[in-house]
Image 1 (cartoon, rainbow, N blue to C red):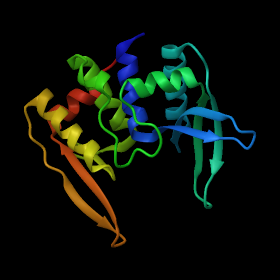
Image 2 (spheres, one colour):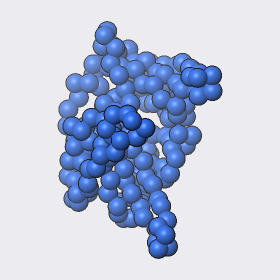
Image 3 (cartoon, helix red, strand yellow):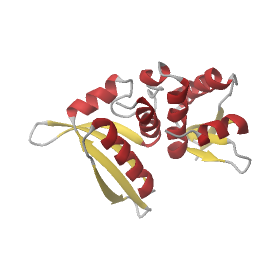
Image 4 (cartoon, helix red, strand yellow):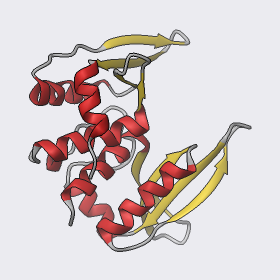
Length: 189
């Protein structure tokens, strides 16, 4: 298994993916690895990485939710892969309050950690005009982990900024300075 590709895939999964189980009316459970995005090319990139890492293919479908843009969904049903990804430290089910950087990344080398951050950047990050990466999400615990990873990689202690949207939804933002941002962005497999 290519650990660099796995790190990139896990970064993308932390941004826009999940592990879900459902019980069908027939009584059996399904185990799905899912990735969602409005950018079809990005979903195809995830699909390609997934296929190269796990040597199986998943399918891409499209959904339209609440008269919004088309949402592309990668999905692969596999209990074996579901459990492998979970054993790496990715949570099952709703991840908002429990997501942390997978332990396989925390034990990885610098290259794997940078690829993980790149995967997160291309899904849940944005790039400011000045070249800085901004992560903005609702998972405070996860962004605190990202802040610790940034400190480990670059020696920078980055604090989170808290936002309240519609007077009830909390979200958090983390800004990465230009030089480390450029190192993350230029990093290739």
